[in-house]
Amino acid sequence: MTNILELLRTFVRVYELASFTAAADNLGLPRSTVSEQIRALEQRLGARLLQRTTRRVQPTQDGQLLYERSRDMLDQADDIEALFRDSRALTGRLRIDLPVALARSLVMPRLGEFLERHPAIEIEVSATDRLVDLVREGFDCVLRIGEVADTGLVARRLGRYPLVNCASPAYLKRYGIPKTLADLADHQLIHYVPVLGARSAGFEYQENGKPMCLPMQGRVTVNNSDSYKLACIGGFGLIQVPLAGVRDALESGELQMVLPDYVPAPMSASLLYAHRRNLPRRVRAFMDWLAALIEQDLAAAQALAQHMQTRAS
Image (cartoon, rainbow, N blue to C red):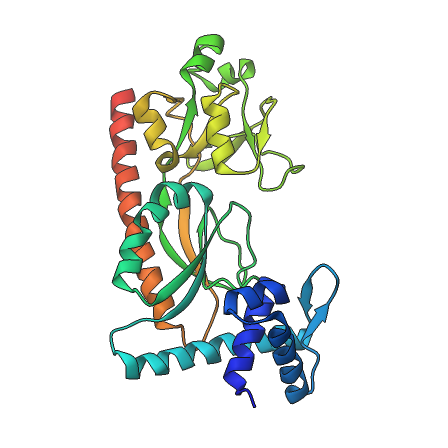
C-alpha cells in the first residue's frame, strides 16, 4: 500500500498544476498511477478532493483544506529527512512569484548564486505583474511592489523604490520638454493598468506630501512593466516608473527624466508569505537571500535618485 506521504505529495502536485497530466510529468509517473493515487487518497479519507472536468482540475472545499494542511506536513517531513542527511543541507521545491522587471533585471541574473549555495533545492519562478493568489496557486512567497492590501498574508517590508517621470528623446523633441503641470495638457501619458479595461489614475504626483492625480490624454494602455518601458522608448508618451526599472535606459540615453519635482510617492517592496506554523527552512533561506538582494538594489536606486535630483537642479 502506498504510504500517506506519497499520496499527499501526488495530491499537492495535481492541486498546484491543476492537471493530472502535468503532475504526472512533474513527478515522473504514468498518468494512470497519479489517477490511482488520488482515488486511493479520496477513498482513504472518505472525501471528494478534486472536481475533474474535460479542461481542468479544481479542488473541492475538502481539497482546499487538505492542501493547506498537507503543505505544512510535507515541509516538516522534508526538514526531518534533511536533519539526518546533512544538518546544513536544504532540500525540496520552492515556488515564487516576481514582478517582470525585477525578475529580468535583478533576480534571474543572480539566482545562480542561491542555487549554487543550495544545490538540492529546485525552484519554480513565475514572473508576472498580475496579483497572484499566493495560497490558491501554491506559492511559497511573492515579491510585490506597491501598497499591500490586508489579505491575511504576512508582509515583510523591505524598503521603498523612488519613482521618476520619463520620456524618450524623440518624444521630447516632437512635443517639447514639460516644465510645469500645466504643460502636460499638450502631452501624452502611457497608461498603466493591472487589468485591461480598468481606468488609469492619470499623472500622479505629491503636493505637500499629499498624493495628487491629474487626468491626462494618452493613446496607449499597457498592463505589464516591459510593455510600459518599451512603449516609452518607442515615443508614445510619458511614464511614471520605479527608477530601478529604467536605470539602464536613462544611462544609455534611451530615456530622459522630466518633471523631477512632480513624482509619485515611492513604491514599497514587500515579501508576502502565508501564515504557517512552521515555515520551511528553504523558504526562510530564500526570502533572506532575496531580501538582501532587494535591499542592495533599493540602496543603489536611492543613491542614483539623489544624484539625478542634484544634477537636475
